[in-house]
Image 1: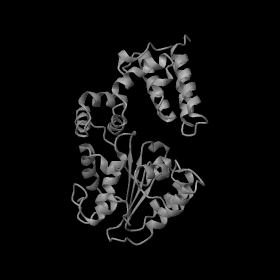
Image 2 (image 1 turned 90 degrees about the vertical axis):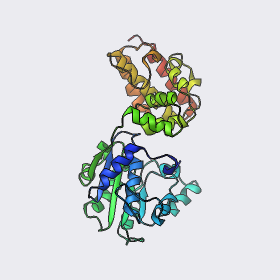
Image 3 (image 1 turned 180 degrees about the horizontal axis):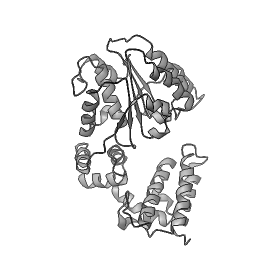
Image 4 (image 1 turned 180 degrees about the vertical axis):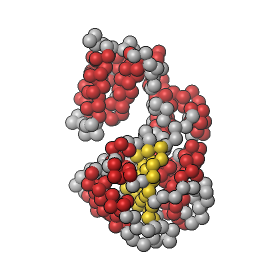
Amino acid sequence: MTDSAVALAPWIAAQRASLLAQRGHAWLLQGPSGLGQYALGMELVRAWLCDAPTAQGACGQCGSCHAIDVRTHADLCVLMPEVHMLALGWPLSEKAQADIDDKKRKPSREIRVEAMRDAVEFSQRTSARGRGKAVLVYPAEQMNHITANALLKTLEEPPGDVRFVLASEAAHQLLPTIRSRCLGHAMVWPSEADMLQWLAAQGVEPAAAAAHLRAAGGRPDDALVLARSGRSPQSWAALPQAIARGDVAALGDWAPAQVIDALQKLCHDLLAASVGAAPRYFASGDLPKPPPLGALTRWSRALAKAARTADHPFNAGLMLEALVAQARNTLHSRH
């Protein structure tokens, strides 16, 4: 899915206008996932490079805007894990693409230091179109220490006509020196009414929009992904009881990372319910009776540990069965 496949949300447009009115060579867009960091970052670089920008952003019609749309802009460098690059239609370097095509390695899930070195070299070149250059880093927390340090010197002493936007869903994981070199912007959490209206404009039925928004923890981008995944709100509502029964089939077509995410949401809501707080991801009536707090705490820790290896399961089917069995045992635990 490309960024142009989704209509720009009004809260992103408002933040774009606010940031464009300010000066600075490096922005750090920060906040939880699903609030539009990538979309806002793209809007900033579009406006910076546009041939006819306005206070509201890029014109959308010029050669620069078209070059970004088709992923060929000579003055834009996009730094992402290769899995993100491929999913969003950004080209990899010739060497990286050749290594992956030849099955020498899989697409990276972190921002590779080789890509960062290419970006540093890019930032030192002369602008091809004469409107400066831009570097977009997303998700910025996917830089390891070596990669981050390669960026740091350029952030400290930027070449005259290059601007940076780092978009992060876990800014606390960034080096303090990286954070201190950027102007910070906390992503706006829109109102529920605005989010529901935007989801409706994307073709999501109102009742389904509200259900997906709840399942996404009130994060609009994540809610849209859920709505387009083909999974029904009814199947989400039925999930807690299915897990309590040990029904593996309820999660049959989910990737391990998606299963762990769903189980973490269920664990969160049961922890909330056990201390008298309102659930966030499921309706109260859809939840089974919470087991003892100790059992939930142990389950929460186990899920956090499983999440660290979710992208590299030894056997996805066995992992799914083990996760569901662990969940069922927790929900029926008496201590």
